[in-house]
Amino acid sequence: MGKLSMAEVSGTPADKDANLSESPYGRNSTGILPSHVLRRLIAAQREVLASEEITAVQVQPASVDLRLGAIAYRIRASFLPGEACRVADKLSSMVIHEIDLKSGAVLETGCVYLVPLLERLELSFRVSGVANPKSSTGRLDVFTRLITDHAQAFDRVEEGYHGPLYAEISPRTFPILVRKGSRLNQLRLRHGSPQFTDTQLRRLHEQVGLVDGPAQIDGGLALSVDLSGDKTRQAGWRARRHAGVIDVDVRDQYDPLDFWDPVYVRKDSQAIILDPNEFYILASREAVSIPPDFAAEMMPFNPLVGEFRVHYAGFFDPGFGHEAGMGRGARAVLEVRSREVPFVLEHGQIIGRLVFERLTDTPPQVYGAALGSNYQRQGLKLSKHFRLP
Image (cartoon, rainbow, N blue to C red; front, side):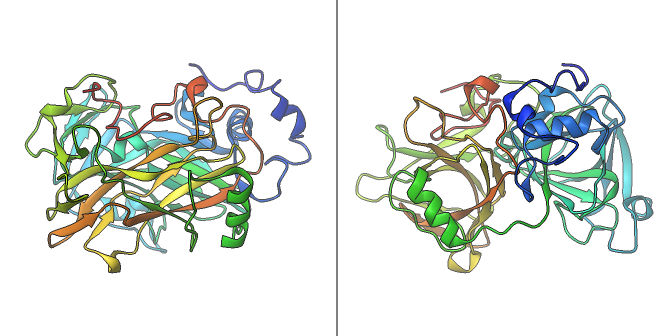
């Protein structure tokens, strides 16, 4: 796919309804920017720019995939530059060695890397950003966070930011093969500071059915874990340590049993024990449906209620689980890591919450088969890199 031209992004019904000269961000004055608005802004070299052409495949229904640049730095430790510094100001004292990514390189487990990205931002007044690992990145237990100059928090881009972007990468279980152009995280842009209350969320659930059953809403939509097991009583996967290297840019390549052990539940007990510092793939009990004009973000559940956490927050695109003819919703995959002690996790236990936010406009295409989305009809599903068992 080539550069996003103005001709490429014109002509859809949503484009005709959104007059760029009057309202560059869509029908609503605040909210997350959808794909057709992002394409227009990229084509006009506004908000998101890059040292190499931004391709159409990078633009998702409500986010932009970010690409690794040509060099990775192995660094001594994770860091934030702080309000007074740029990343480059701190980098010289942190770098152990440089790695050329143009032909591909392996990032080892337990190490921390910093990679300048091909994209940079020139955000307008009232436009800010939030980043998250892509779904496939999180399911590989690859800790990936966005850093900007003057940042005091990871994965957050301040309103009006002008400057470069960096990815901090730390594989936790599997070594990974990456190269220049690999896409490990994604960025959402937001215009204004929209608020979406629990009252509004309850009303939205009454209108469209966000989950296939009663909705527990308190600071977002609660999701609980499914430990009922399938016909073989499998309820999840646990990552195997000291497995092989995974190429992040391949699909349907690896045998799951070379990298994962199935997790089974007993007939008389719908529960599992999370072992300390081990990584699990589980699924939500609820089937989730995200309306086309909304997006959601998975927030980790409060760790004070148990010695575990959902390891990676994640984006849920507009249309996830909402595809016509597929039934009500799709399961959320839960990337779970236990903490310092073993912990019993039981069927139906709340494990995370979805926080919803309106888009400024409805994208012309939402998450689903038409976009070749990987996880639309998912149940308990590993990342796209693994063949179906």
